[in-house]
Length: 112
Length: 112
Image (tube, rainbow over all chains, first blue to last red):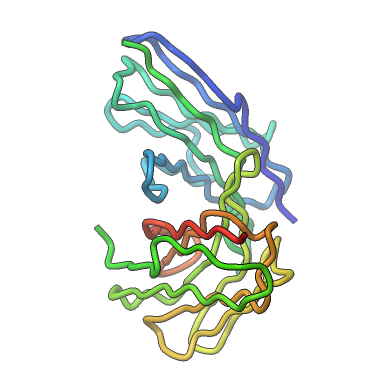
């Protein structure tokens, strides 16, 4: 089955700097890659996703890139703000009826 | 916010007792999922359902059972709770694989 590795597990950046979180996946047939943000005491919430027919997607300060050949995808947050502090999860969906497989998460701290 | 409610939100129970967690949705989504979240392990799938009375096991299903007798309700049962099942449990719903998954607020379960 699919296996998703996520790095780093913790990340601290200064406010205004950029943050990058990277994930690798094992199943070359995976075709959907969402990113979730989890704030303290809440459930994860989708912030951006990308499908395998696209190499990059942007939404204001966040972007996701996908390299199918290398089987990795990354989340980029620019001009970080304190409210970006949270746990971020990447995930991958294999073809067929199998559910999303999540990475272990990255705790991002934005220091004002 | 998606109409998804978990109950109870917090529970403390004794080892060996049965426990049932409830997930209720008002979105009429086909898929429902139960995950557990533990430090260092991220989100791990316990069981999921792809329709009424249609369920399947996830990565960490041992010691858990589920039932879905109505579209809107997905129950997770710990037949005989153990300390290793102390965790935060999240329910999620989606209208299809490869579509956004919406998470509940979580249930913090402590087994003493």
